[in-house]
Length: 178
Image (cartoon, rainbow, N blue to C red; front, side):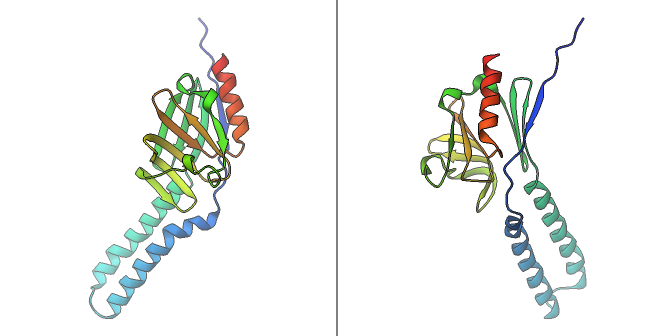
């Protein structure tokens, strides 16, 4: 008896500038400076420093790890998007590929993620669940100038920033015709 062959194709995510990690580390650095300043004024004990400083380092490490955790994979008829702390599996058959578009969010504000429902975001980077008007959107946006807008049949949207959006859209169309 033959096994079904597994197909797995990965698509590179458009890189986000490394300096965006500063949006994570600068507030943590500010808290560390406040911690040291209050310790020097003898408002904190050495035990406070011993507990808080490693916690801040661990928090910064986890958030930095999450920032770099980004993957787009087309696997066995499903589009699997992994971004920060979130993962979304969407069957290719549930995508409305005839309505898919590659957009620049600066020119098409109607496609820009709105209110964050449950996500990880900073200027120029959105990951997780957002509102797009009245619709729910799952976002992995690292480059707002080339975002793949993928509506689904259940009135949700995927907003993705693959490095080559046309290649991903072509692969999805090829998968859908099989």
